[in-house]
Length: 251
Length: 79
Image (tube, rainbow over the protein chains, first blue to last red):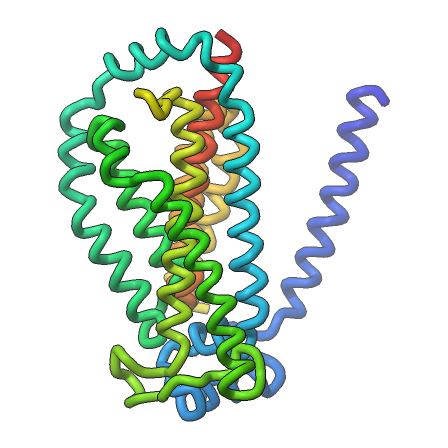
């Protein structure tokens, strides 16, 4: 296929796609006026039946809690798969290791970057815990909070020597946290089966709507997801950093 | 549809186009981060703060760092 013909085919199909997208957009419901009864029905449902002021949290962890269980396990296996792949490549690097590690040690991070990272780590940790803990009350939850917490650990990497990050972030603890988070979600799902008769069914007291300790299993599930997501992201990032910096166990 | 929504939509279109036009992968990552931020602001303006939070953490933290580390690995292999 010559370039002119290829360009012609590309432009024609892009134009067709553009027309299709435009037609589809014209058929969308107006902003703020959803079709069907579900969008309006779910708000009183999550508020009165589930005692959660964050409707998204009630949907994610109750109405379609089994889907979230699947997503949890996808992230878990993705992190394990990436780790296994990256670790199996490690042996071939050994020869160039010593020289490269020397370089990595010599290249110090600029002082302003280190200062900013150190100043942001604490607030980011608090913010992450807040997002995880208030997932059933305000926007946020385990996934978002977990990644914010992982970002705080990443700042420790960026702001200090990576030797110091080894002490803050022992890899075995991260692995254990990831597995424990995924396992805790499965256990809570099974707990619904045992105590309430259906998987993911709530089996904890609802408490007062709007309080920190309310909405039954949702805050517990948020903590499980937060620990799992934070562990998975830190694990993947530290394996990639190992590859980039060639930091070894004997470093 | 009010002005704020239109402005955020225009920002998304602009930064999305810019992301495609930048050819150097390392620079493209930075522009892609701006694109992600524009998307997050748009989600927030449209009343979806949950999605906006996820968008920020994924596009500003997880993806750029992973892609940067992969680029660093490629650079080393080429040397």
